Image (cartoon, rainbow, N blue to C red; front, side, top):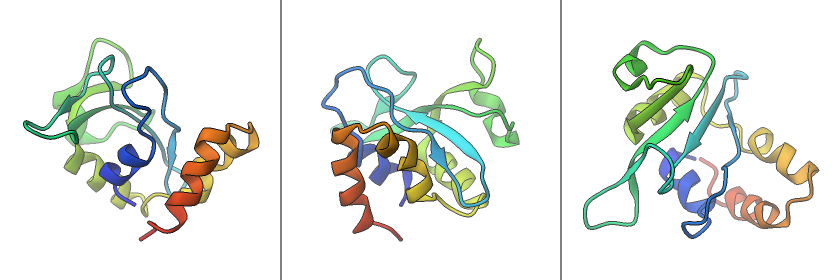
Length: 121
């Protein structure tokens, strides 16, 4: 699953909500957020995001230009960069990414997890 698919599947119709932290197959964790309150932007003439806000404790050199005033938060990062970072860490572990949400009994995301199963790559 790539970042665009993740964003579509966790879309909350422009309400303020925090998406789950993405857990990669090697254990690397990255928060990927996109909404009108995050440092993200939609593509022109599209509902899809071209840039996102991310947070991670592990510094990736390609993130340096996107540093914000907040520690470990990077703004307006192109989705392709985030896909590359996730791929570098073995790809998204969909089950681990949504494990804590399911454990907390958040029914909205339980339904999303069912949709993800068919989208796994």
